[in-house]
Image (cartoon, rainbow, N blue to C red; front, side, top):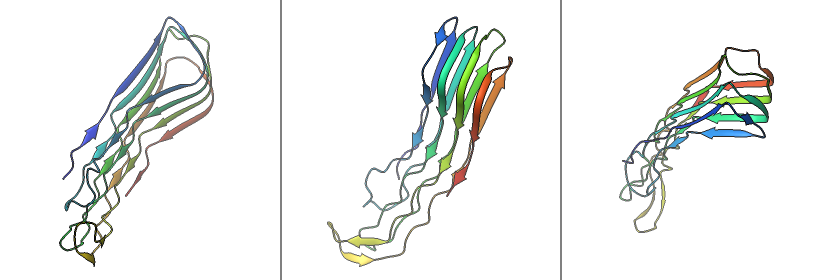
Length: 170
């Protein structure tokens, strides 16, 4: 079985002007170490992607925060050609904060993603690369569970498009 993977990232704008596009990613992905090894591969969990604006001027086209989790693909048993289940994908937390000291905030879009995507199940087909040629049973896809998004505003920012996505797909 592959191991779990989780990452975190943080950015703070304090007392300075911030311009252009801004991106913070804390995506986690399950291990796909060897698709010919029997067994379920790793889970992927998004970490914390956080951006805080405090006492700053922010003018940006787009701000993206990603804390997505993607499960690893299921392996294939070289003896039976049976596929294993995919790993679980669990979204983390994407958090955007405008604190009270922030002034003159103008952004085209703020997009916060904490999606979970389950890994693919093993195909159940072995083409004979180092093992017998055969067709086995396919493995189940992994579960996908969305995480958390938070948009915290102590001021009145100008934002044309706000996306908060905590979808999960398995």
